[in-house]
Image (tube, rainbow over all chains, first blue to last red; front, side):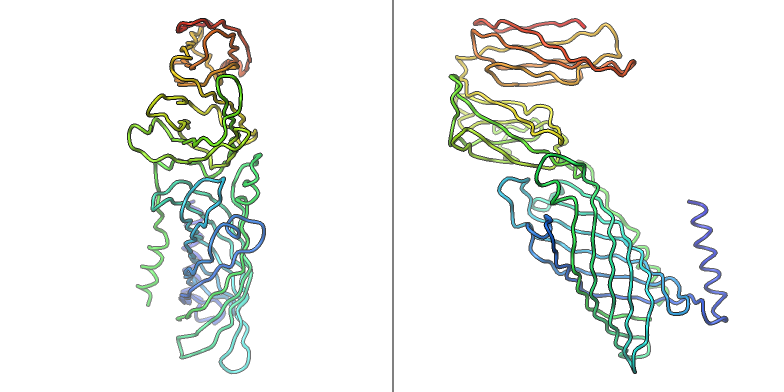
Length: 196
Length: 205
């Protein structure tokens, strides 16, 4: 833990001091957007829930050439439509804290694309009429890209498309629902603004 | 701008922790229950309520699950693993208490088959077994009853297991003794003749 802390401090110091070199910058920027995770595959989130509109927020810590290291949060609340022979609950909230690596590629004039890869810790919190009844923990990997349009010097609009997959730490078992709740997969559409 | 980002990072670091979550999200269990009358015939079309912990219909608490038995007297459903004991109450509980039972030993790796019998008060007697240990290293991991009757109550700490059973039959009690010193489990069985009165047994181990 101490080593990680010193490493972060070192990286920040390097970032602040290296602005003069022009390739390693402390470059705060923030993306805020709406996200629509459209679930796919033979999973519980696909079969037993309606598609939600969630939020996705991330901000960069530093920039190396055109690559960025970001940390972020995405969240969405799914309405459970019910299964006759499974635990009755009403809503599940998906929260993901993630690290993101991006690389921005300029296209012509005000346009650019930013491919990214995310690695996140996910929590799926199942609720019944507001009361928390169970929590599933998982690891999420997300691959995709943003298409950016420069609106002003510090403002860009972006649309994103990505594929995300989460494996939950669910034990093996005989219930047919184990396979459905062990994994989730989604195509995530995002739309938002980037400020830097 | 920097202040906003610092504030945002602080918000992102805020995590919510909750206690008293009734189910374990890392396990899913499947329950397969069958319901019979005193003659061993399946009981169809009966509404069965499941409660967590010691909640009972008397307390006005809503059941966790409610299902109706099919033509073969069956109920099958899956749930996240309950952290408290699960109890079964059959329709008509308030009037004549036909089934007021504990669901036994849920295990994600098995189908958790268990039979319950509709036995009215006059048809049943109580069978209670308490285990006494020669060593504090010993404990009971599992105690089940084979016969016509229902598990009523168990207290694992005091090693007391209670069943409501039909009169005039022989039941078999299966139990697993765990010795934490040797890390050895031993499964034993013993028959008991049930007459027309309640039975209280002390089993020395």
